[in-house]
Image 1 (tube, helix red, strand yellow):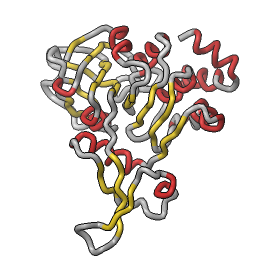
Image 2 (spheres, rainbow, N blue to C red):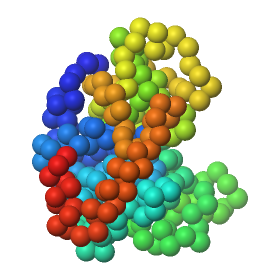
Image 3 (cartoon, rainbow, N blue to C red):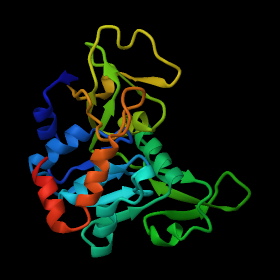
Length: 259
C-alpha cells in the first residue's frame, strides 16, 4: 500500500480495465479519470450504480457495465446510462442484486462460481447465457442456478478516513468492503488521514485493512456531489445542474469541458 496524489491514482487505472465502483463513489477520482481521457472501461457495480457510472458513461469512458441497475436515488433516473443503453453505445451485463453480490463473494473467496437462490421466474435466467442451471447435488433433486464469480481487475471506492499505515475506515451502509476483497488491485480515496483513524469505530463503520489496498489518496469532499456518510449531504444544486446539462449533447459537452 502506498499513499499517492490523486493524479497518480487516476493513472494507475488503465484504459480497458475492468473497474469495480464503490457505492460511496470516488467522484474526485472519477473526474480525474475523465480529465485524463480514460476509455473502454468495463465497469462493475456493487451491486447497483449511480452518479459515478452515469458520469463516466457521459464522458464516453465506458465500454460495458455489469450491474443490477443504475439510478440517482431521489434525483431519479440516470440519464446518460439510459441514453447509452437505448443507443447501444454501452453493453449492459444485467444482473440482480443478490446474484452480483454473491458473484463478488465468490470472487473474494477465490472460487469460480456460486449458486444463487431465487432466480427462477426471472427473465435473467434466459438472458444470461453464462449462468448455468444444474441439478442441486446436495438437495432433493431440484435445480439451482450457478453464476460465475466476479473479480474485477481494479476497484475504486471512497472512504471516511485512513490511518498512517493505510488501514481504511468506511461505512457499513454499502458493500464496498466486499468489492475491495473481490478485486485484484484497489484504489481508495479518503476524506482524511489521522493517527487515531482506526483507534475506535462507530456502530455504522467498518475497517478495511491496508493489506487489501494498493493506493490511498487523500481527497476531502471526494464523493461530492454525492453525500458522504456522516460528513456532508448531497450537493443538490450540483446534481440538478448535471441533470439539466444532460438533456442534450451540446450542453452535456459544455458541462464536461468544465470538469
